[in-house]
Every structure is written in C-alpha cells, then in structure tokens.
Image (cartoon, rainbow, N blue to C red; front, side):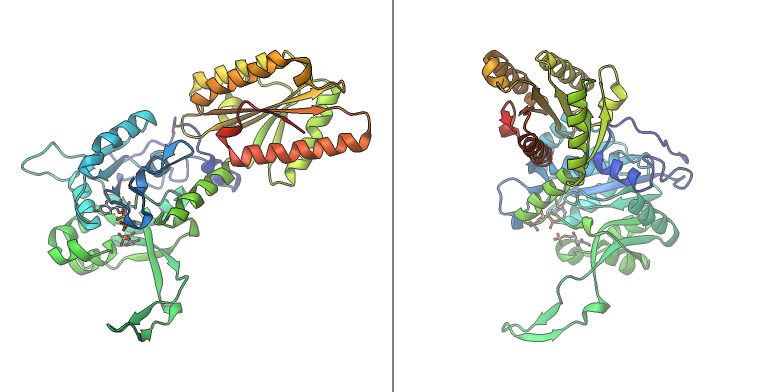
Length: 437
Ligand SMILES: Nc1ccn([C@@H]2O[C@H](COP(=O)(O)OP(=O)(O)OP(=O)(O)O)[C@@H](O)[C@H]2O)c(=O)n1
Ligand SMILES: O=C(CO)[C@H](O)[C@H](O)COP(=O)(O)O
C-alpha cells in the first residue's frame, strides 16, 4: 500500500471548516505528499488521577460525546491516516467498542493497555508486529504517530509536518515554549538551582517515528524506562540512536489533565461551532429586513451569517451547517421546522456535534404569538423534545414588529444577543422555550 485515499465521507468537522477558511482546503493537505503508510497509536489506558473524577478523563463527556471520540475523529478524518490503534484498560474495552459503534468510527482497532503509559504504547505498537500467539498483526506502517488520547486538538497541517519529519529523520516531536521556569529542589524542599528558561522547551504530542526505530527502542528499553519514563523521544535516542527533529506546535496541543481543562476543551469546540450560521429569511419584506439587521448585528459577535430565502431541498447546505436561524411571520412555519428536523435526523447530521435551530417568529400584530396560539407553544416543546434526543437543539424567539422605531430597534438588538448566546452556549436546558426579544 503506497498510495492514500484523499477523500473522506465523514461528517464535516467544524474545526476543519475553519482551516479551510484559512486557506487550507479540507482533505487534500497530504495529497501527493504522504505516499507511504501511516498509522496512529493513541494511549488511552490511564486513570486520570489528577482529574480527580471516578471516570478516566478520556471517557469524560462534553457536548454529548466522550473526549476520546473527539481525538479519534481528528485523526480519522485525515485520508492519509490508515489505522488508529486505541489502547485502553481491560475494564474499558467494552465501553470503547460502544463508543466506536455509537459515533461510527471506522479506522479504529482496540488494544489492551498496561500499567504505565510506556507499557500501553508498546502494547499499541505490538499490534503491528508478528507474535507467536495472538491475532494476525495489522499492516506495518512506515511511520507511526503517537499521540495522547487526551489532546483533542491537533490539525492536519501540523500532523503532516510531524509525519514528514519522522520519515526523513526517524523521529520528530512537538514542542512548546515553557510557561513557567523549571527549578530543581533539594530533598529538604529548598531551591537547588533553576534552569534558564529560554534554553528549554516543553515536550508535547504528537510525536512521529519510523515504525522500526520506535519499535526497536521499546524492545530494548529497561524495566526502569517502562516504569518511570515519560518521553518516547528519549527512548528513540537512547535505544535506536535517533535524534528527533523538534517542531514548535500550536498552543492547542495542550493535554487535558485537570477538571478545568475539560471545560476549556468544551469552550474551544463551542467557539468554533459558533463561527457561522445559515439564516433563512423567507421572501416577505419584513422578514428579509429583519434578517439583514440580524446579519449585521451578529457580525459584531464574530458570527458570519449566510442568507437564504429557503433551504428546503438543499441537502448540501443542510449537511454543511451546524446552526440555523429561521425567521418567519407565518404561523405555519413551525411545520417547516418539523420538516427540517426530520431531514437533519435522516442525514444523521447531529451525530458528532449538536445542531442548533432557532425559530424566530416575527409577530406583525402587537398581540404576541404565544397569547394567540397557546397550542403551538406546546408543539414547539414537543418538536424540541424529540429533536433533542437526536442532538438537535431547537429554540424559539418571539419578536414583535413594533411601529415605534426605538422599540423595534431595541427588540432587534435583544434578538441578536439572545441568538448569539443560544448558538454559543448550546444549552440543552433552554430547548423548547419561546423566548421574548
Ligand atoms: N497506564 C497508562 C497511563 C496513561 N496512559 C495514557 O497516556 C496519556 C497521557 O497520560 P496522562 O495525561 O498522564 O494520563 P493519566 O495517567 O490518565 O493521568 P494522571 O497522570 O493524572 O493519572 C493518556 O491518554 C492516558 O490515558 C495509558 O495509555 N496507559
Ligand atoms: O507530553 C509528553 C511528551 O513526552 C508526556 O511525556 C506525556 O504526555 C506523558 O504524560 P505523563 O507523564 O503525564 O503520563
């Protein structure tokens, strides 16, 4: 296998859409460059002591998905990565299989972990090697990337740098500037000496290796290394004589370690998910006018709104969008929302990330919709409850088209703020509510 598939049928990762906007088109970064087999080992057999939760951090959930699934997805959607070996503790094996099934991961092979990170990584690498007992091995890669399962943010262009450097030099690794100075302490707890910070770097992940180099290093390393070592690059140097090429990586490579890191990871994903939305205006003059005001106001919240009169039948648009705002002055428009939810469900569009739909009802009379149509209020609740089970978050906002310009402007302002907050926060607790702007 010397060539790679460069197309992906995975649902679109919003993080990659951001990359595309930055000029790197989705799915073709490695095209024609990575023409050798590449596999990934994700150690995920730790217990997450520093997190202080009963669930190991890789299985902690945010946005309805365990952390490890986000990391797997990052690698899985890169066409030139063939196989992902996920190393988990024996007791997590079934849970891992369930995650693979539920989130439709397709490139993953699960391997049993060891008592330390190095032992887990070695177990992962052994999945590619012949052994007397055990199942037949996976095809041996030229380059293997090792990456902690608890670092969900790594992008294709950086992985490409790591992979190519590993192919050229035998080993490569991500580094970051130190945030704090490193000091040595005496056994009595006093300062012994401090290191000159500019000379040192933090070693992060991913790291890349020629498979034969890192496998040999693990075969030769000592029990002490297995028990207390924390650095794969060091093993490659000491036991295979390979000096790693170090590449400065982005700050998003940080490792989820403490509880606050889980909240930070959720924030990063939510922020990316809320960069754009599809605004469905209809054709009535008042709804089109409101749509263009909303578009302008939300630009101030760093949100780009694409305006469309309708989306019905436009499956391509639906499949690329994570946020929809439908403005309507007609009562029947709720049935259009029901239809949209149905289409999104059929596409399984919210499998990996929650989708937000905001139904904005523009009341042309001073009498609000919720007083005129109490039955329809309960039907928003019904639709939203069913949608929520499929990870689709439906909210309603009512805005009265006041004839008094100041009141109207104030309502539009409030509508913009509520809309931005609902999209940014993706809070399931407010679904089915008809909020007043
Ligand atoms: N026996 C182990 C220990 C750790 N890891 C994995 O190595 C990665 C980085 O390790 P670390 O952040 O230290 O994870 P934990 O050991 O789980 O955390 P802690 O040190 O707080 O217990 C994690 O994905 C972790 O699951 C592993 O596969 N096998
Ligand atoms: O980032 C690293 C680079 O080698 C660490 O060694 C790795 O994350 C190990 O984590 P820990 O020592 O906390 O188990």
